[in-house]
Amino acid sequence: QACESSSRPTRSSSFQAGSIISMLRSLLLRQQNVPWHKRYNWYSFALYRYKVYDVIWRISATACIGATIYLGVQVVQTWNASVHRTWQHYARKERERAELMDFIRQAREKGTLPPSKVTGFQ
Image (cartoon, rainbow, N blue to C red; front, side, top):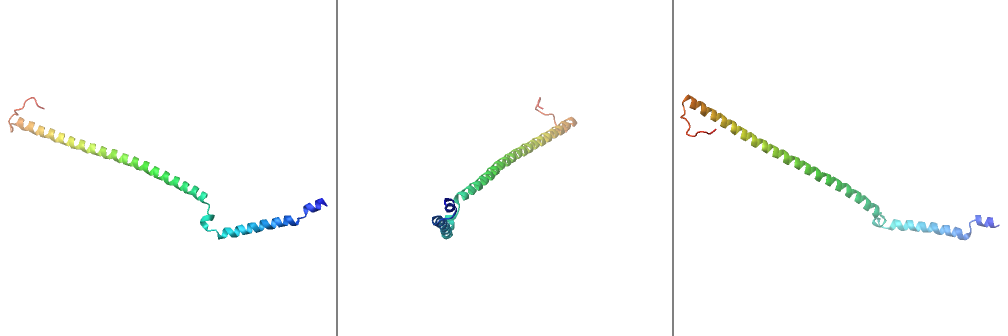
């Protein structure tokens, strides 16, 4: 008889099961009436927000490093172009000076120009 009574649900165990079901039902009904911002999992939202912040930070850091490298290359290229332009100007002036000196030498050899008063100058 002890085995039969333990396998059969008693009034108290069925009352407990019924009370659990009614508690779950009332909990579900209560959660339906709770506003969405109270039911929302804010911890999960915070984790996703920090993941988004990490991605934004990574993109920003990469953009800053890329911009720094780009501007550095632009400065070097501009500097190089400036030095090249200065060298071309200097070379042109020296070439024109050499041509002028050659014209003067040829004119002095022909006797069109008098000899220079300056001696020992090249």
